[in-house]
Image (cartoon, rainbow, N blue to C red; front, side):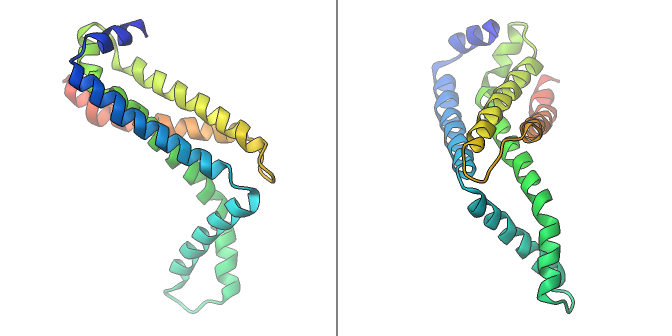
Length: 175
């Protein structure tokens, strides 16, 4: 960790400023967007995800002749997996934004003897902490509840996205 701060201090000023400002602003903005979704009460959150699930069901049933009851039944089937997929994707994007915030500095970090994987672990640890606070926030929202499984799913989404980023960007540059 101290090696990362040493690299950050010695990197060119323009690269640091760009990295910190834009990526940091993106992380803060996106975390606020996630917080806004978490602040919705159970009715608003449920109707949003059910409307999306209903749109998917209507698309699948648009190829044949089906009743409205069939559409609603299929939408009910899609709603829970859709909510969990949203957790995975939104925290995957947040983890990627964290990773992009230090990606310009990774070359100097490796030159000082650091391993890029430790920075990805740091990124996922930060996402884990934010996901925990987000679930704690949901505990106090009417009709919502906190779930440890959602925190783990959020962290898995971040880990998955950061792994893909590591394979495609960081590892390629290291060869």
